[in-house]
Amino acid sequence: MHTQFYGLSREPFAINPDPDFWYRSHSHQEILSSIITGIEERKGILLVTGETGTGKTILLRQVLQALDPSVKAVFISRPPETFEELLKEILRGLNLPPGEPNKSSMLSRLHEYLYRGSSGDEILLLAVDEAHEMSGEVLEELRVLCNPDPRRPGPGAVQLIFAGRPEFEEKLRSRELRQVIQRVALRCRLEPLTESEIREYVEHRLKTAGGSATGIFAPDAVDLICRHSRGIPLNVNALAYMAICGGYALSRKQIGPDVVEKVSPVLGGRKPQRWKEATGSIKALAGHTGDSPLITKVTYALLAYSFLALFIVFWLNLLF
Picture 1 (cartoon, one colour):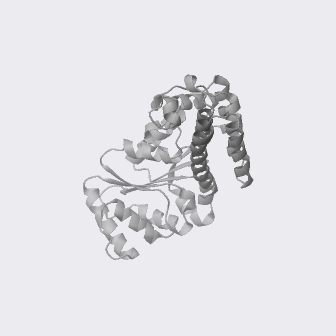
Picture 2: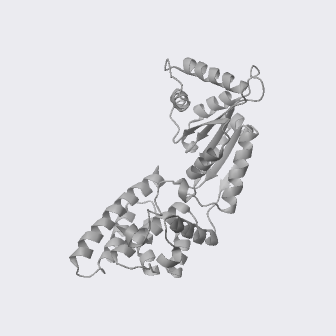
Picture 3: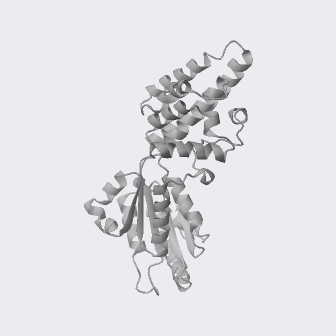
């Protein structure tokens, strides 16, 4: 496997978010601190936006890990279509029996939980990822749920974090959702990494996996990763992963810019024809491996299967 070939203990550029590999840029740390403060001060609705692949999901997970024990968090990875389905997920996250699967019954159970928790100064946090997929009806129901209840002693006990694409904030500005946007107390935007941050990001992930960027990537190869990735961490992961697989197929201990250039078409667009172009790049790399059956058959097969898995996950993330 390519990880053993480069002396790595595990895959450093996996697509799935992994808190162990989280890179704290200055802006990420500021946003994390602001969100935690907003939760502790019971600000209401907190909003995090960013392009696909900028790290919204892993930021939410970091927030959940850093919370005070008095905060009970429920993570919603993808919002359901109806408020009733969302209530089921919330009750499941709180380990509460759903009872009758209707809105009235489930709200009653949730309110009972909130009243008990308010006496102990407990906060319920709902962290909703991919919030741009949420319907206007569900958003309005959530706003009502988070409104302070005069029967509760003290501030409202429900906090909300929404994480979504930039267009989600535009959606909230619509006339139908103006009461929701009025409750948003904090807006944070995850920006693409700068060139220096990309270099630190690559080095950080490789060190976490037991390697070093200077040992695996030539400096001009990292230059190309910076240029082609456009500062999007998901793009950096895709390019670096493909380049490492390509370097392994070529039996190169250090990856040069030619390998990065060959695999870069995977980031060139969202159209189906990019599959052929990217696959052609991999075949071009494999064509240089020589006549050894061990290299041409085994390493190329490994590369092809790993590339296929990456391609499917990557494009599904972009398209949906």
